[in-house]
Image 1 (tube, rainbow, N blue to C red):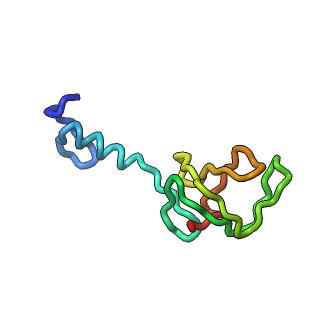
Image 2 (cartoon, helix red, strand yellow):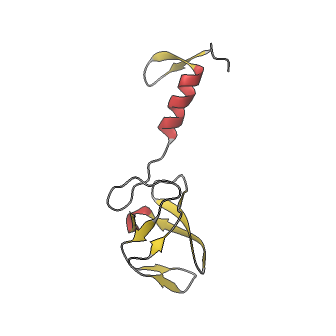
Image 3 (cartoon, helix red, strand yellow):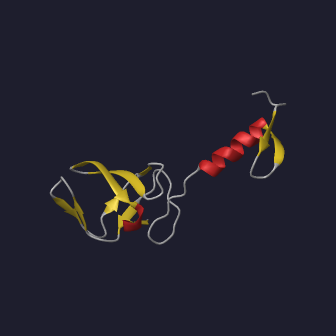
Length: 100
């Protein structure tokens, strides 16, 4: 779209420049992921487990207080993707972690 194109925004009921409408749409689609305490999580954050978790398929238990480094957000408000030694493809629920 050219900069001089205008798009009708149904939520606000106004005509907006196309570039502004695209930025507004992207901000509406952004998913906020919050930890157990309510802190906002972002890619690359370090988190600590607040509860012992049994990892299915790995035969291992992650203990409370375990530090998980460099998380990645998945686009789901409840799940975070992370790496941990010996466990491949670990996905944790945000309600069981606290931002460090």
